[in-house]
Length: 516
Ligand code: NAP
Image (cartoon, rainbow, N blue to C red; front, side, top):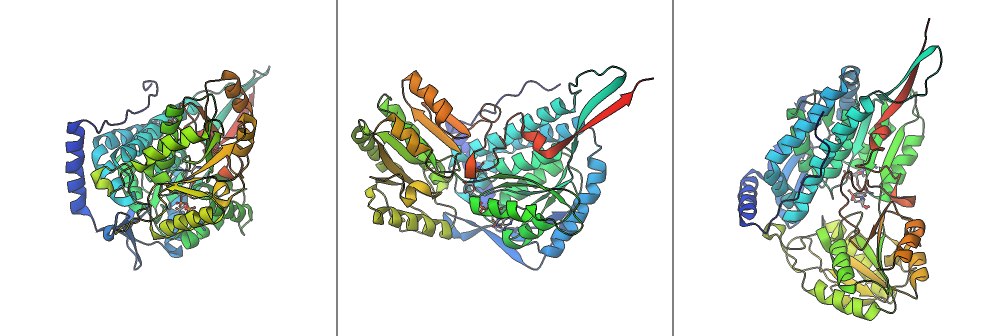
């Protein structure tokens, strides 16, 4: 049996040695930028006429990698390959499948700095954010490998006289995995490895903003022993290839993480029966958030300032768990706001190769969308306290922005912005703060800063979010320790990195034999 699961420690980039290794990795990766990568279908590299370019958001003229774009005929080939591979992979012993994940984790540890460097170029994470993503990926591999061994062991059933009974978990079939770009390795590998270790085969359609991380994951999983056809790598536009695969009658499940709009569309499409379909497709959809941190009158204000700062502006606010609303008791609003704004003004924004606190947002459309929300926030009488503009340089940079005087029903207090924009909302008291916190369609993460245990207990019961924290940031969920997934329009609450997660990729079969 493997050793009990432990979270992978994050690299300390204040150490000169780690920074040197990272500089070398960045230089090595820089030399490889612009190369072309194929689709992988049934273990074969496949090229197409149409290309997709992954661009560096800090330097949009720089092509990170060129990908062959799949079309519907390639999606069909991938489905056939995945169906074929399922016939053997589903009977491969769970231990062998788990060992593939453990080996992939070892390869990732070996290639850690290189993976971090690719992520810096492809999505604009700074060194620590990139490393946390890779560490989480390793955690998923180690955790789900162990989980599969637990599910493959004898399951408890109540003894029935005169019978020998058992219950076993078997895989579902071919799954479509559709990840976002913001945790381009962790979420992609988390969903893919959970599906594969449970005995399913996968068609992976990476985000068009981060296909390189999808390629690296595919390469590593195949090197670790994932057989041909078990993992098919299929970059291409969500709107055509994604739609087609979601509707396909042989698709057994869809594992999606991304925006609410796309998640709801997938859920609706998957619910419609296609001709020839013989099952109800299972949809796991983890979606957006409008996460809040409550700063109570009985809080340690300096701690709260630090927690809100990290949660709102880490990776440019582009986390589903990011704090986009700080709800502050009016008694401490002035003190909190002054301290927070002073700190936000100190945030450095630069090309992530410099390891600045903040880098660019993912693409031009995101930059425009975020600036649009800032305008709306100010039009609705929010008060600009700092930031508010794009930064005049190549790349999709935006100043860290704080808008005060926001009312709970304002657009920027209701809709997901997915960028470095924080709304400050004044609450009359703790009751009012909880009501405001629960007053959106989402329910992903939340945090409360207070030193009052009774108030914590109230929030534990009433703050309706999938991941609730006290006196700490609302980002940075750890595999195993903080199983992750949200309520309401934040998704299906699948609790990635938790003990229930693999069940979403399996079905239970009960077998009973009459004894003579
Ligand atoms: P997105 O625009 O919804 O895209 C997510 C994925 O869906 C991409 O791979 C995209 O492919 C694909 N897609 C788009 N249209 C599709 C369609 N019609 N059919 C099938 N697939 C389709 O989201 P994103 O911008 O990548 O990610 C940001 C969002 O993800 C935010 O809302 C964030 O809150 C959420 N998120 C949630 C969690 C969570 O655990 N709850 C975690 C991370 C992120 P293309 O790139 O080719 O369009």
